Amino acid sequence: MTEETVAFDVENGIAWVRFNRPDKRNCMNPALNRRMMEVLDELEFRDDVGVLVLSGEGSAWSAGMDLKEYFRETEAKSLGAIRKAQSEAYGWWRRLRWYGKPTIAMVNGWCFGGGYGPLFACDLAFAADEAQFALSEINWGILPGGGATKVVVDLLSMRDAMYHALTGELIDGRKAAAWKLVNESLPLADLKARVTEVATLLLKKNPIALKATKDAIRRVAEMTYDNAEDYLVRAQEAANSHDNEGRKEGIRQFIDEKSYKPGLGAYDK
Ligand code: ACO
Image (cartoon, rainbow, N blue to C red; front, side):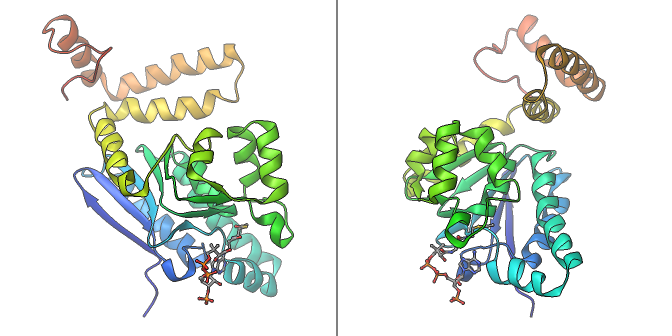
């Protein structure tokens, strides 16, 4: 029987997707990477999914790449096998970065090295105070590849990124939040309730606007002001062409019906 490397349930509009190799601390082997892409494919356009949450079974979120199956075994085969394994991993992380629905990393435990790829790919991240994060690559003799260096340079200050990558020291969820690696940290016992609350808030928003907004945040980060201004005009016009009715309804309920205030919450879909 093949190992079920990814588990998921859909409940009240939320897809709860879990790394599911708890005995191996959810480290990512090629089978998990292939399966995760299939699961993302399956969930992305389902009408009953509005938000995707990524967490881990057991004590880990993900202990990074599988040192045996992802590194040692592919390196023993060929350069082609290495490149294939890389593209399978990087492929689903990229897919997640540009996912059609908002995504939330719910970091319940260990998060190492390669785990920073999917962590960054999720739009929002909430960690348990008890979670432990490290760029442990330096501890076994490589640099933080697979985007991990880029992730900490984008999210952390240069000093914190450098310290984190050079020392390989663990930080807990609280420090990860202070360093802005995650949005918030809270006791593990409260983590799922908080993530459910945020996901439920997102479910009330216009889904076309959510996708356009999350893409805009990532795209404009690398643009000059003028390029960003131009991109945003075009992105809004493209979104309008998909969703004229929703946007007009949002204006109508505020201006004509006076049934809500956009400054204080979302219109009634
Ligand atoms: N690659 C391969 N196997 C792993 C990995 C991994 N990244 N992480 C855990 N495992 C395996 C262990 O070998 C062990 O297997 P076994 O039961 O067959 O002996 C099993 O998972 C359980 O691991 P333990 O070490 O016994 O679990 P413990 O809870 O004591 O420790 C911890 C957890 C701290 C996460 C530890 O497993 C660990 O240090 N893992 C490696 C973390 C890491 O540095 N990952 C690589 C980051 S760099 C990168 O991703 C590119």
